[in-house]
Amino acid sequence: MTDWTDSRTFSNALERAETLEKGSCFEDFSEGQTIEHAAGLTLSAHANELWMSQTLNHDPVYWRSDAARAVGYDDSPIHPDYLLASVMGPSVEDLSEKGGYFLGRDDVSIHDPTVAPGTEIRVESMVEAKRESSSRPDYGIVTWETTGFDAETGDSLLSYTRTNMIPRREPMATDGGRESPTDSRATGETDDSGLPSEFVSPDGPYFEDFRDAHERTTNRDAAVAYRHERGRTMDDVMVATLPLVTLNTAKQHHNDDYMADSPSGEIVAYGDVTRSVALGHARSDERTYREIGYGDEQFHDFVTVGDTIYGFTRVLATEDTDDSEAGEVTFEHYAFNQRDEPVYSGTRTALIQKRNQ
Ligand SMILES: C/C(=C\C(=O)O)C(=O)SCCNC(=O)CCNC(=O)[C@H](O)C(C)(C)COP(=O)(O)OP(=O)(O)OC[C@H]1O[C@@H](n2cnc3c(N)ncnc32)[C@H](O)[C@@H]1OP(=O)(O)O
Image: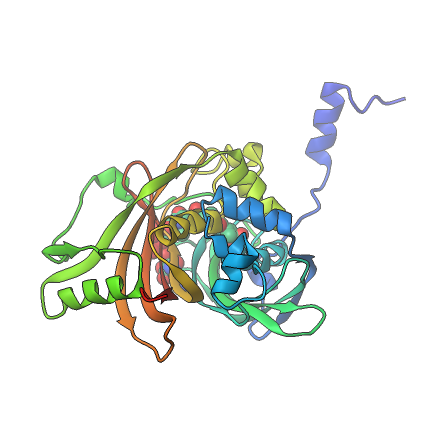
């Protein structure tokens, strides 16, 4: 009788056996196609708290009902970053599990900011566009519009568009980071010729502080641009646990063996974790009232276990509203690592509490 566990036998068996593939290649997508992501998930208070605590998103509105009621909610809702990751996670197996680069995400809109723990969500994507990559012949570039719905009511909760490089069927490629010969780290060059001559910081965390700082830069060679003090070193929970808790099956976050041959040589952080840390740092320096939406999101380099993520913010615009509670601020947030290299950037619009509240 064959001992399949004999090392030579097993190695031969592995060599001959076909691998049942997961995920989709570039050729599998067609424009206009709608894909229902089978799993969906139930937003749990546990995963929400794990995400918020580990990414340093400690706004009491999302932890305590009295703080939630003070800003007009009935109870603490699900945090928008966990909601976003929970809509994206179940889509990964169908869209990007094959291991393509996450090029960018745009038009992230929260349709309901009051989603409660226990809500069951259903996720659907539509293939918006696909094209071949001119720089990387092994890949194509696909853009999807993804929406998360309340499975019970059918209400749309959150939507966004995202673009990935997706491996073509032959030959397959590994993921995890840039292969580009024009890696900025290789050149060591910094070009600050386009930067304004003066950086201004807000004097406090309220809407008026951002508005006044922004007004101070008007018609001057200046920008509201500042760093956040906190940093967060990426550990195993951040890199492997958080994507898995949202059912994100991308192997680049939890399979070191597979990633050994990739440019990073090891597992890399899920971009949404990195992003959430940067946003958590920024939110710790403001009085957030409501999250409105996000855009122009890009992941510039990979992040691995041991990297420390810091935050940097620019204020792009401020707009007073009729609401006596809060005014609107549009930020651009950046995450950067211990080598001062940007790893994420994106815009965010939020209502920020007014000082009189
Ligand atoms: C969720 C998830 C994975 C998943 O999903 O499951 C993850 O979290 S994973 C971890 C987080 N992530 C990373 O770790 C990536 C870090 N990052 C990098 O490693 C590099 O940044 C890069 C390899 C992505 C780019 O490398 P780069 O060399 O700078 O790439 P570029 O040459 O600028 O772009 C190449 C081609 O993409 C086109 N292109 C670029 N941007 C956009 C856009 N926004 N929309 C539409 N097309 C775009 C461009 O037009 C060019 O097209 P062509 O090939 O036709 O020329």
